[in-house]
Length: 623
Image (cartoon, rainbow, N blue to C red; front, top):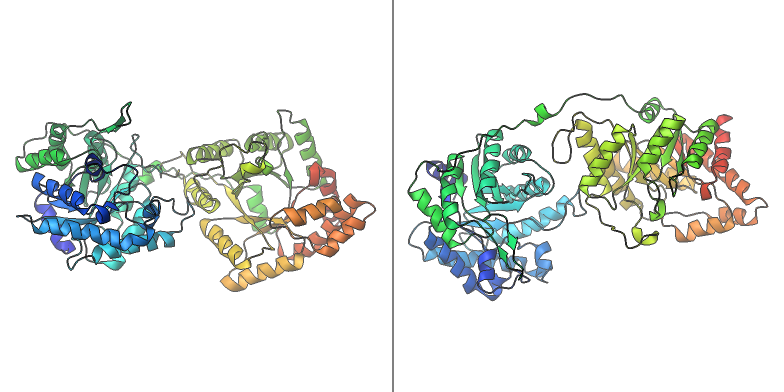
């Protein structure tokens, strides 16, 4: 069936989708810890019986039992090598059932989320996601001579994932109808925080034929969501397939859905009145719910459910175009002034006197910026953004707040960003952060919702545009200056360049580098990057760490990933009569070689010896 015919038929009258597959498979004895998609291979008769029940109940469209039949989800059951077989079996089973029906029934290829987190929030690249979707969709399209009549992308909460899936489908089948459905939580947002108006705008921009809502809560919520989407995308056909209410778990572990078939029947007219051209059911629904919806469609009456009054604001209306001036760091880099910053660790307790005194001394020594580390080496310390605020207030120097993603979920990340900005902290260094297993609380939570590249994108592309991750207004745009991590002497230069390029594309303004002990190798890396990508390297604030003694040099060389100290340099430290001062001398030499191709120095004191980094800065003051 081509897209024009599909759209024309839906404009004539609303069509009825089927209901839940997993609910009925479980009710027929399939354990919950079984791959429901794999049942196509082991118990096809059970799947066929469910399709038949929905057709007999009056469904115009049945969906293949392939919701989770992608390589990532099938891998949970050891079936990742059988993506093609599982999906083609799903189509074959449904086609055989449709062939015995005495009326027209369309077959929709069901494609659900991959079950993994995609970049920029996760580590699965969009290219890898596209490959997984391509593998599944090709199997659905080529299963039989007929394949499927349309594709339904459903229960997705990540718009990047939906956009990737649609792009792949359009590449494979330019004229196949596509229905794109997102799912929402109780607060009318997707799991990633997107509101219905943002979802509607993004879905309406895709090359699809129907947009809508499935799963989520019960009919009442889906009706409300549908009305919001209709306001934002009035020209799009809409679909609605709610759950049978929010699930409840009994004391014996059974999951029950409260909405009855009669209740679904009552809401069917309201969903159609709200604009739905496709209606059906999702989790918790069965053939009785679909039969009740069929009766409501065949005997249309004025909706007994009053449509709620919905008013949504556009993204442009939500965003106030007020922008704070750039930070001093941004101005210095833009004007070509050499930046001098020193890393400081927040106190381990509540006393801040030493931190403030050290900051005063570093300012007098020539630092024009201070870096506040966040739980370095995963050791418990005062909150870095509180320490940064105290330093800025007491000393009058801007700070760069180290902002690790590890140990923070999306809610905390965004809350901390807002707090930091409100407290005047506007330079950030985004990093992954040290794993908790190396610190003093190895049992602490070590997970994260977003990788550094994704966080850079969130800050630069959304917060700095006045929007949070979900596309909602944060009252006014921030004006964060964002730095990324870089190793100028990596073991794998190609990998480091690829990662750096992603960070730059996400919006990184500058890079703070790991300590450099081989300036010539660092310059080679910069030259290689610029020659490879034919673009200038972003501003570099290069790491310089004064060595403390021979043991310190050997430890860094042998035990800290990414740090390589030449043997001659380690020998100098081992033989020095005054090792700390020899470390200062080496740091000065390194700094002199780095200055011609960098925009600043990031000094890292050993063991809190701020006096030693002050001695390194003396060479800058004498120029």
